[in-house]
Amino acid sequence: MLGDLGRRRAASECFEAALTIEPDNPVYCASVAGAYAAEAAVERDEDLRAALRAKAGLRAKAALHALAPVYRRTLELHHPPAAVRLRDTTLDTLGRAYGRLGDGLEQERIEALQALHTKIEDAMARRDTPALRRLSASFGDGREWEREQAHIALARTLGWRGKWTAAAREYGAVIDMLSAHRPQGIAQHSLHAKHARALRNAGRPQDALAEATRGQLQDPLSATARREVGKAHFALLQFEEALEAWQHTLWLTPNDPVLHWKVGFCHWSVAQERREEERRREALEAAAERFQHAAALFGAGGGKGWAWSRLWAGRVMTELGDQDEAVRHLRTAAGCKPSKLAGSLLLGELLCERGDVDAAFALFATAQALAARLPESANADADWGETLPVGEVASRAHVLQAADAAERRAA
Image (cartoon, rainbow, N blue to C red; front, side):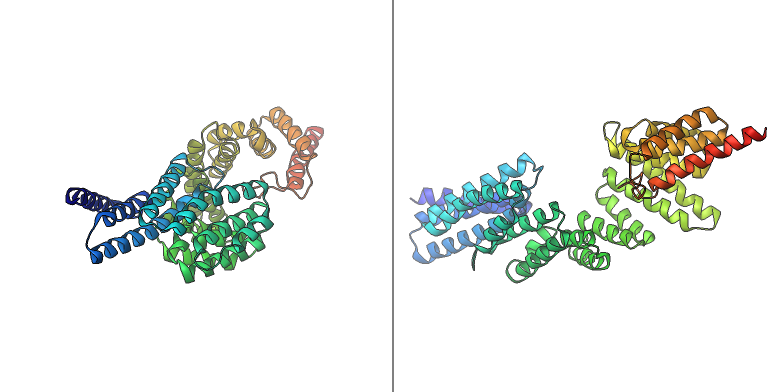
């Protein structure tokens, strides 16, 4: 018996040592709980046995806290397989630990967490917000962990359905609940950033900025929070502040192509406001660098992102006066379906300036034909700048054609 106790005590010490390296690993926490429970099962001293059982219970609770963000990630659309393995291993280990402790209620709770995952996943797939709301409300005191998972899923699903005001309200409710019961969960789930996104999409950029800033203060190394701070500043047309936030975010996530594109667009927007030529050119050069970097990160198979990065690189090169580079990028953009309308106009204008009128007019005809299929109030660069209304594209192409026709008649 003493040899068995010694082995189990050694196992406890081994898992505790592992936790010093990865303190937030839920499997390690659950394994320590199991080791203490196994040690308690063979300990003869009543006081020592009670102490070991208490340690096992504390480590089991710590395992659930550490599991919370992993469990939530496995409910996301593109969840990593490693997260699923981590979730299942943690729950299996916790179930065995509570079994050794003889705690049938907690053992049943752990088993129910597997079924809860399926219920939430199914309701999210159907975008069934009433079902998620009922599921969240079904968990009372002592089951805040389960309520937290269902409530976050509800808020996320409302966002998917475009109901951003309702999503913002639910994220706020989750934050209030966790503030009272499990404050560390707010940072674990980046809830301030998620709340800020919902507020921004609901047309409340000032409130979004305040909420995103809370998230950044809570976790200064969170790329998610800093990204939302930048988006809120951008929505408020505070381009310099957005740039500052996103530059910090790039240090944390240097290979994010969308972020590089946003930083490039920010630099371009700043350049439009600068009157001093040297500072304006400096901003444009920074924009060109970011757009080209974004294109490289998206890659030729990057679809819309790659096409629009090439278009904006060409547009900025035009403003910088580097026509050869501009033509190279704009020709690529004009050949890609997502950016064909805007690319045809901008490349046509550049070729017209260079004297290649026939090629320019062919591009103008393409731009006009594509523009005719869209409402005039739409943007040719929808979601990628929103700077080229379709009506303006058609007018610019028509004016240049008319001007050239008038010159030819005069000649």
